[in-house]
Amino acid sequence: MAVRIFHYSDLENVYDSPEQAGRLASVLRDRDSALAAGSGDNTAPGVLSLVTEGRQALDFYDAVEPDVETFGNHDFDYGADVTGEIVADSPQTWVSANVYRDGDRVAGVAPWTIVEVEGARVGFLGVLDDATPSLNPMASDLTVTDPIEATREASEQLREAGADYVVALSHLGRGDEELAAATDVDAVLGGHIPAERVERLDDTLLTRPGSGGEVVLEVDLSAGEVTRHVVADAPVYEPLAERLRERMAATGLNDTVGHVAEPMERTESTLFRGESRIGNFVADAYRWAADTDVALQNSGGVRDGPALDGDVTVADLVSVVPFEEPVSVAELTGAELLDVFRGAKGGSLGFAEPDWWHAHVSGAQLTWDETTDELLEVRVAGEPVDPGATYTLATTDYLFYTDDEFPALDEAHRVERLDVQHEVLADYARERGIDPEIEGRVTMHADD
Image 1 (cartoon, rainbow, N blue to C red):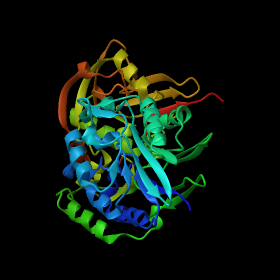
Image 2 (tube, rainbow, N blue to C red; image 1 turned 180 degrees about the vertical axis):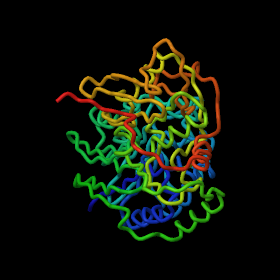
Image 3 (spheres, rainbow, N blue to C red; image 1 turned 30 degrees about the horizontal axis):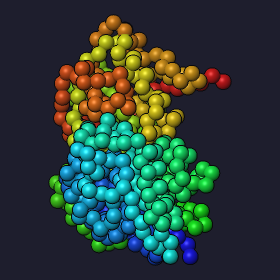
């Protein structure tokens, strides 16, 4: 008999679209004898998650009754205590082999578990990106150990316990390939990156369904095959959709703040490939609110999802930047500003592809050499940046804490905090409207 797992991950703001969540639930409920496994970021971020601190995911879990789950970095957006409450109230088994708090495993979860299906014993372990304490300020009190060593230890214990298959539920992003190469697991079911993946590395199967609950991957361990289920083709499971509609109606976030005449996309290709309308809108709002020389929004901080089209509500803008993070102001020399913008491409971010672009800007024009992967020029107010001059920069407060994105920016540069990001966007939309254009703020050059 086939030993199958329905793999979902990075649901994030799917709950803000009740119909989409209902279709996803239908796919997972119709899995027959297959297992259902999640590989992280399935409670946050999102509009409803801000209001419920991630507990809206319990509606989905109760409808689907998954078998096993592990943590993503955003599953700690409201602190480890809240995460523990969600773990305690959800029907599935949670596993995490490398996450600790005060010397104990978070929420008391086990490093691994074994689930029997179709006569086979399938062992699951979970691992989280060890950069999480720097990626998520609410996870700064966690200790996340080396995921490879944790996987080796848990895999050995699973084999000794009689597991026929060992599956790593991974929220490592680009680290999945190294994990597969360095351990003896049969499959790595991954997340953390919004791009889909189905590959094989020697004897190990690697999958990633992407973000937003658009795709579920059916992994057949016995045959080594993967079937792709497109969620948009499924019927809506109305009990879940209706519950989420009720939650959304209770948020009080349905006030219209603006109108978009031409749909404004926020897909992976839009957010991480250079200048975009949605990125310009966010950065312009920051610069307007802070009255700074320039503004910067990290691409990963703008969440993908349905295009903004027609009437735009506060909830729509929360879904664009669904974090309780203020907009903050930095004061930098021109030399420091250039160092900040050199972080717009490259780096070793676990959640990113190597060729992604990470900067949305306002008040500046950046020219990048794709052949040498170097910043060629930055202009502010039409003039080249003066290394000795002083400039003000508006950005998300998150960038002052993380070492992984724009590392040249740190807390010493911050001089002021303003309102939460989505509140700034809403005020800007009411005052200035929502009509961003592509203006040549980012130019990529490549030698022929």
